Amino acid sequence: MMKELKLPEAILLDMDNSIYEYRPCHEAALAKVESILKEAVCMEPAVFREKYMDARKQIHSRLRNTASSHNRLLYFQRLLELGGHGMKIGLASRLYEIYWETFMNNIRIFEGVFNFLEHARMMNIPVVLVTDLTADIQFRKITRLGLENAVDAVVTSEEAGAEKPSREIFELALKKTGCAGKMIWMIGDSLTKDIAGGKAIGAVTFLRVQDGESPCLSGINPDIVFKSFHELTCILAGCEARSLTCRQPLKEGLP
Image 1: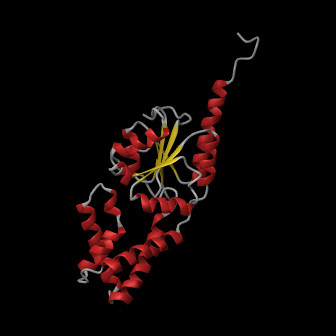
Image 2: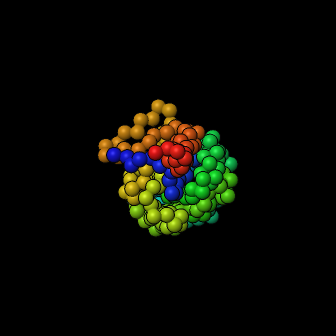
Image 3: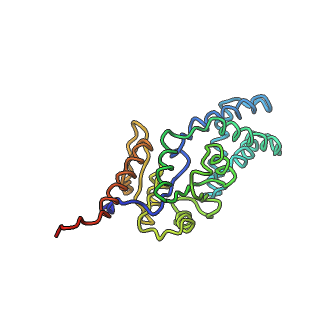
């Protein structure tokens, strides 16, 4: 049963696919890399996609539950090896930079995010970005999205030494806020990472879904499902209003 929804002491917020849409950025970046490889080593698009998925799977298997498991440089290094191109680390590095440059050029923050963050700040509620992947790349995204002065802290899985839903990453986020964790909100798009991890620390969990999505996974149920950050701002404002009502002193003359 969900605890009574009150103003949070702190808000933990996922990044990828929670405050911006990941897939269009990734697909644009991958298409750019695909075109470079076709020109550089005559790798056909179908072969590239196959080798990319194989490389990603191998790196994930070897480096599971670490930030390095997402490292595109390792993906491209292994992709070139699988394609029979051996020691082309210069090309792998070039692909890495091209991928992320294209990704950043396509990243767009969801409507309503800044308004939600501004509302939280006006109520002195710290917001911490809690995200898998390496610090270098996530910091680039934060800067590109203009979030550096809109949130209070960030914790990456590289810094924490473990990926969500491990407790370490959430506990480090709470430590940075100085909150005891009695009323924490965890907002994200992944049932297995954000919602499961949030529930493990006793947070109220908010799952972002898109139109047509159904948040179904046995044993993992978010407390609240939302589609837009405008909804979250309304929920936060409602909690604030109830909090202010509860603090109203009794009028003189009332028993």
